[in-house]
Amino acid sequence: MITDNMIEQAKIETLFQMSRTEFIESISENQNIHHDDVFNFKYPYGIVTISIRKIQDDTMYTNFQVDTSKGVQYIYQHAIPYHES
Image 1 (spheres, rainbow, N blue to C red):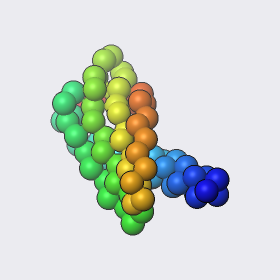
Image 2: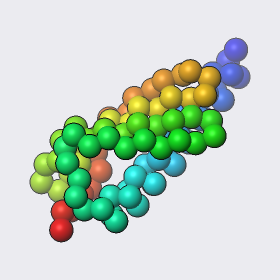
Image 3: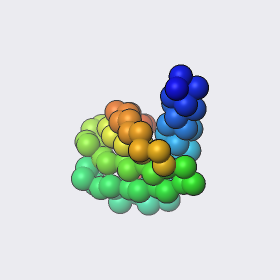
C-alpha cells in the first residue's frame, strides 16, 4: 500500500510538471489570457485542469487540479510569471 501511494505521488508530481511546462508554452503563444480561462491537458496516466484565478501585475495565479488514472486527486496553487504584450 505504501508503495502504491508513493507511485501515485510520483505520478501527481510528474503530471504537474508536464502540464506546467505545456501550459507555459501555450500561454507564450497566446497572449490573450483571461482570469477565468481553463486549460485541460490529458496524459496516459492522468488529466490536469488548470484554471486561472487571477492575473495581477506580472503574475498569473493558477490552480492545477491533477487527477490520476487511479482516481487520486491533488490541487496545486501555483504562481507563474506572466507578461502581457
